[in-house]
Structure formats: structure tokens, C-alpha cells
Image (cartoon, rainbow, N blue to C red; front, side, top):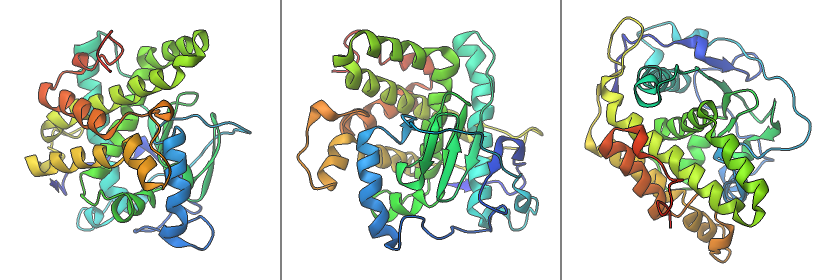
Length: 301
């Protein structure tokens, strides 16, 4: 996978809320003093409990603010900067949906911002720290991520491939698509009507977001910036396989097993490794977001 250094990053889509704006690399980990070993247990518990997806936060909320990614203006250096590469991923994902959303759903796409944070953040969905992993908040229509998550993903969760990063972001933007369409709100209503089905409904929502990520991946190589320059100069089947591998490493069964506890399907909220890989492939192979109807009777078993 190679990015085009001439492609323009739409920094209006990114909020950098990491103190003074952050530097060019990954900062220190925020959980205690235990480094990756200290954060991973918290993260696994959070992932199994309902994060790396749509926010289930509670507690006091607030408004998140940030600065533009000013360090991404130098073409010669920007692709060496983690934030800038992720800025291009976000640009690709949002430009894909700006075109595809009206074609698939007959409505205009409403862009969402990605908010970078370090350590902790206040959102309209509540307060969070880095231990929850990336998430989407429907109350303020923002994707939240502490970029240190990628270290955990690579070193502790067994997904070191670079395409794991845009897969994570594309999954979160899949939740934004669900929010715009009203899918998330309807799922919440079904959960309220039948609390016993809450986890199963959550699994369907998460698998659909995986499928939407796959649909983006199908067309990612053709996404362009505002000037028509391609964002990716190469995207191979091997890159896609890294996305599929990532989906498998963060299945509920894999995470519960890695956390040292008993694998309990009744507690699944995101889907098994097999299910997550399957629905990513549905999106990737078809390139059609309308094929991602995980809520259709019998689609998820």
C-alpha cells in the first residue's frame, strides 16, 4: 500500500485535540506506567464490553475541540507522519461516501470529523480514555481515536499490517453512515423493546460497519482528493488481506480468549472473528453498500 504524496489532505475533517497539537509521531501511552502491557488488558475488556465501534459511553460529556493538522502541509515529509497518513485515509473514506452514499441510498452524505486525542477526551456521548479504543459518537457525529491504539493493535492484538489503520477508520465511518441513515437509532429502539436481544442487535450493527468498511476498500484505490489526484498509488490484495486479518483479530471470541476468560457467546457485542471477516469480504467483494443488510432476517446467525 502506497499513498500519493501529492494528494491533498482535507484537514478540515480532522481535529487534533492532543494538547498543543501533537508532534509527528506516536506519543506516550496514557494508562498508568505499564506501557503496552498495561493498556492491553483495559483495552481488551473495553473492546469486549462494547467499544471499537459505536459509543456506549456514559457519565459527564462535553464538547471536544482541536486544531488543524498544520504539520501535514509539507509534501516532502507528510507521509512520514502518522497523523498525516491517517488524514489521507479519512479524506479517502469521506470522499468515497460523498459519492457512493447518494448512489446507494438516494440521500446526500453528511461529513463527520475525526477527533484525535491523547489520554482522555470529553464527547457528547460522555467521557472516555484511551483504554476504550476508537469509537464513534452519534450525538456529535465524530470519530474519536487515540493513535496509540495502533501500537496495541500491532503488538498486542496481532494486527501489524498498515492497512489495519484505514480499516479501523473505515469501520468507524461505517457507524457514521448508520447514524445518517437512522440505522443506529432504530437498533436502539429494538433494544429497548426487547432488552434480551440487545447484544444480538449490537452484533448486527458492528458487522454492518465492517461490511461498509469493505465496500470502501473495494473502491479505495480509485478515491481522489479535491483536485482529482488519486489518494492511493497502489493498493494490493495483500493489503486487503491485512484488513481481513485485523477483523479476525478483534472478533469477540478472539478478544475474550486473549483476555484469559471463558469464551461466552451470550456476551458477544461485535461478532466472532469469522463473522467479522465474512462481512468485510461481503463489502469488499461486492463493492455495494446495499449488500450490507445484516439486519435482514437470517443474515446473521
